[in-house]
Length: 134
Ligand code: THU
Image (cartoon, rainbow, N blue to C red; front, top):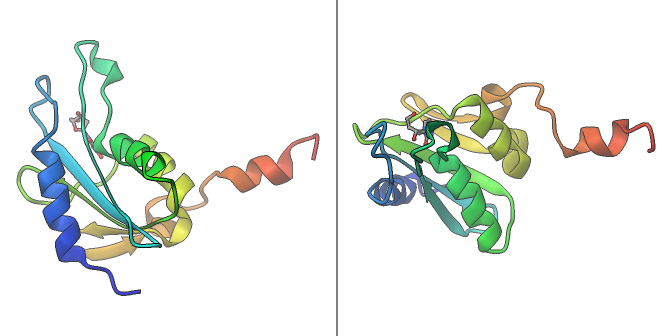
């Protein structure tokens, strides 16, 4: 599958323009394609109760569900300096649920897979196969 990374950069920057980040002043935008070609986006949304702020990747995962779900194939996360952002630990886990090891994310040195970004991830299969009731 050939990935239109240029489009993802454009859409991630557009999403970043919608960020609500009056506390950090660090807008972040995220854009992804699903394996069936849907485009999904997100931006960070902060809160006066600082710890409740939502990363751009949280918004993206919510947009994925809103648009019917699916599997993430390729992802760009960008900050206002135009450079890619490495997702925080919580967001790596959130994203892995919907993309697994083969999800590609753009870095400053090109795309890498989530197998590299979140090795040995915990996921739904662990719940299915390792519950004492299974
Ligand atoms: N942020 C994201 O949206 N995604 C990341 O991967 C890293 C950080 C946001 C959270 C907060 O609103 C701001 O960037 C500063 O940490």
